[in-house]
Length: 462
Image (cartoon, rainbow, N blue to C red; front, side, top):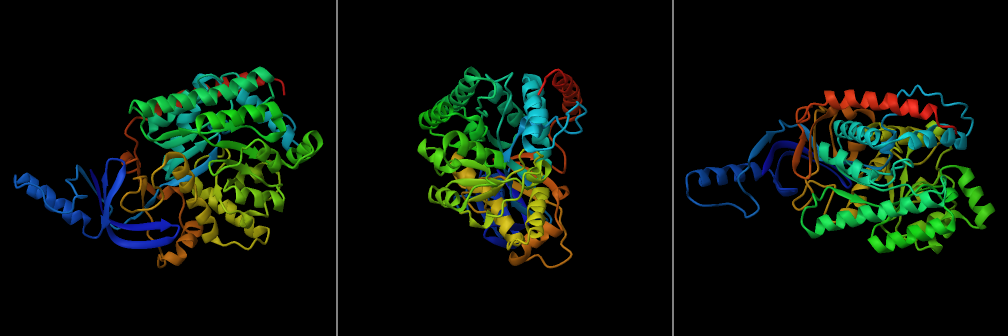
């Protein structure tokens, strides 16, 4: 058991601030929360030590480790609801990219070359770097979306190993596409299915860590013919997982759907039975009001990726307030969701949008509902019975910290640097700004893999 003493507990949705709180963690779950939890645990330990049996509430036991928060803010772990871990070695890239006047040229000249250049070693190194960055930013769970056309089979296991090394919670999938022909498209579907089966086998023999899950991935409707969507739909039904797909990131995706299939994107997905509460759609910039209404009716999640949208110049999603289920992701631009939320908020206000910081903080917190739909259990609150994904942070507010202004502090005062210690599934994976393993060798290896990745890119024509 781990006991966190004297915490200023913050929760984001609904917002709350509770000072002088103790949090007792048993295994991967919060066992007790309250001002008396520390005292009860200490009394239990003293009684056990004197050989007098047990006392106190059944939920309270002897703490193996005590963390004195010293009044620091403690909050539920943050979720990045859409990421691309194969992009982790793109930072500062020196490979010749070529002209990128529009979104399709950005894909062809950059991302579709870097994913083709990825191999097992570079993907593992990239995954490790992304996970270290996420934990340092207080992000305890990441929903990944992988593309590595030269390394399809086994790619998801490689990513899973990178998550397990760092101890972060996550999910991944393979990005099915017809960009490299029918055989690779179907191989991508099979990788999703095989990986889901391996996770199910772990659950059956009780070797599953409880920290990793999967989706059935697809690139975008414009690179998925009907045969591809049908194969994905079969995989969704067979595995019981949800779809993870980009939609309407650029107007081209919509125009392509109209030209080739005579349909809007969302009704096309609906025809294949791909809209469900476990479905995650990213971007959705050019979906119309009827499509948004259908997604709401099917209880689908849309993930907004503000920095990526700005970086690619694809436009702004003015319909965000219309969504029933909205979460935030980075689309491959790191795991720092403090920065992501700030960009989402400021870009929204720049377009004269009606939302305020608390609306975007609610969207960030909604990532925990995605976890609940995929992992089961309870996430996103500091309450007994909830998963012990917890961040301890150094933030000394210069103004009163109240339930009604947590979001204002998040946008205008807090940033990723406040992260001090992180627990995932009740395990301390980052303590006093240190990992329990040497990161130097990881970064050295990543630099070598990045150089090789960039060299392979140079040989790949758009």
